[in-house]
Length: 315
Image 1 (cartoon, one colour):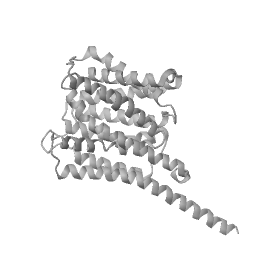
Image 2 (cartoon, rainbow, N blue to C red):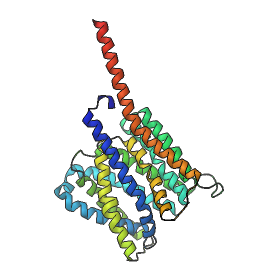
Image 3 (cartoon, rainbow, N blue to C red):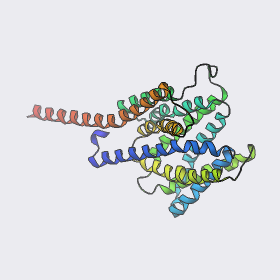
């Protein structure tokens, strides 16, 4: 596919990968913000408020795009996967350890190429698959629980979190298919309205608690406007210009940035295992991104030489 891409298309793809990397940095940083906010409110109240703020901001920008039939249809489907990911991860985290939750959620990087193959019959490039393997191994080293921290096997919380990873993988995979080249705000606004509504509908079935502290309100505004409205819009724009597999590998850097920010604030100290895991994830991103460009160049050169040889034989 890359072999037949024009120079402009290749530049656009690199720009998209760079944009996705930037929002991954931001998502990693907001991990601490969300963690603090949940000390003042229950998860579903926070999600409902966060996505409501994001939906209002994007709806004001998108205008009539929100009501376009295509955006309503595709946005509703994507909202289901997005909400499922957030809900399953939150509930699963109450039943398993944070380190196991982090690793299992990161397994979405493995599920994306499988879903791309199953849903769209798209076989990932060898460099992308190698990047996925490196990122998955890196995630394991970075986030695996300490030996003896918990008995082996998948507990109920682990299974719920595994469902979260599948839901996130589905959202990433379908975003590549549904994302328009232009005018993404309408599609994203519908998604945010969907997640806000589903979170609000969940409130009667959970224990509700909200303390309107400056920290909680600030987290709702920052996550609603920047981490939801802006970041998911950039994600949708970027995935219209790159592949779901490459996007998944880039997103696997989120735990690296979250850990780096946590260390900078003094929340934790990273050992050799964590540094090794982070290095493998970054290597996986480089292999997937730079390797894909090299793979396309090699295929283009091979095709050129083949056509030249064929032309020589014809003469």
